[in-house]
Length: 334
Image (cartoon, rainbow, N blue to C red; front, top):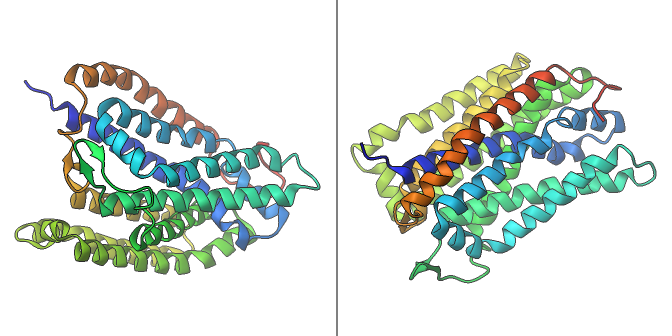
């Protein structure tokens, strides 16, 4: 039986990127929400909800990047060349944010500077990731297996908009996480923020859903031709149903549902992206099979992933289980 290794690797890399978006998304979201919560004690609680797990969350970013390099070297070289600047900005921002995690609790006179580094690093890293996503959807020109565009192709309206949209999405994830992990005044303030963020995210999803097919005829054909329209219609319908359920959960002050339903929105958005771009790994013209590494290389690296992926999943689940429960003022892991 023939094994479609490029398809398997696409699933692995897609899973790794999705896990990163979900897990690092909510702790980046906490940094985005910091300006709305000026009190020191509440900020301590916010950071302590993710202090034991934030660095492990970034493991998935490494898995996605390393997997792309190992399995699809053509895509790796083209995408990194095209998006070098926003990716470097993202890494620099993540460094500042990581240092802020370690130094903020120990600083006295300079705590406000580390708060600023945490906020700035979170916002810039999220914005850069959104810009990368938008530029990727917009398409990357390739000629002769090389990037054929310019260094500032990503600096256009759609990627900039997706950068702002992702800030809203991560803020909403962080808000849902804090509702689940905190209590009292901080939790009530997160409940108040959740619905405005949900409205902004719904508007962003709607704009991207219209903007993309409007500017890309191939994506419009994918979504709106028959019988595809009937196959894919459940995705936007489920987005609407999930949003209504989210509003209901917030109004009724449910503690877990807002975070879970926000995750469902992320899953549906991710699914919509996959439908629009499949089977291209470098839109609009390079498929996963055209960009794949030799079969022996993919098979060799797959052995390592089969061993490591269960280990990563196991320690991730274990760490979240150990540090389950709510965090209160005066408690923490620093």
